[in-house]
Image (tube, rainbow, N blue to C red; front, side, top):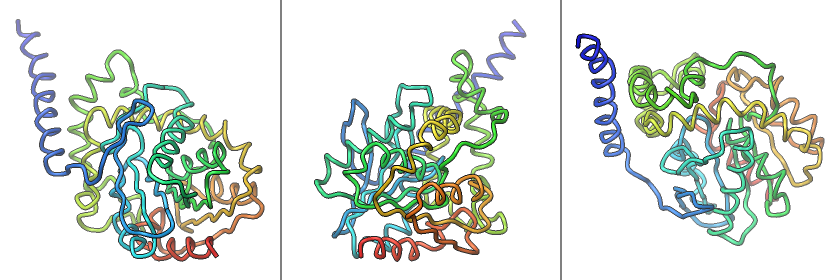
Length: 307
């Protein structure tokens, strides 16, 4: 009896608290855009502004509100389509659990874009979203006007042991239990500082997590999708990186010189070598956060690309 009581306390209380937290998170951060059913997945996206079409693909973990400052800069000159990637924000996740997830995400995003516009868009991807943008272009280059990757993930890095919480979350037996109890609680405790490593001096701007609805990632289904994406990214990039040399459309690679999240030697510099006609833009004082700290520079590169 005592064992049952202890188990109910250890599991029941954090489970109940997590369910309460989910409701509060979604109440405080409701959908900011609209929905379309694509490939049997309910996709959430936002459209703002007018002009040539620009598609924004956000980092990991995040949602389309990561680009709020960039959208404000772009909306006066462009039609901006900012998308919650499958499994993030308010977009439903993919059932696929393998390294095919990245290419399948690109197919869903491409089909969504084609539902919205007949124009060839400029694709802008940040970090994981840069890897996704590269997958989009390697599969559907003829449908894209140009590509800008920012602090991108592009190439496979040296293989190592995955982060323990990712391994637990992805476990088919107890992963769901962990996601619905301690994972979400731990995430709430660390949310305010979770993005610090992306910014100069390891300090995110005040209220950054609130202003970008970062708490949406703490919902169990999103945490599980986040972990599955992360565990499969390295192999996904290894599979697609041999195709970069074939890209012919205009490409701009923007990097933060102090970026330690997607190290330039592993990603941006190698990508620039692979795509010999690409333009490399180095930005100082931004670390991994060009879209948040220098959105105007991204607008300038879009303008240059369209000339």
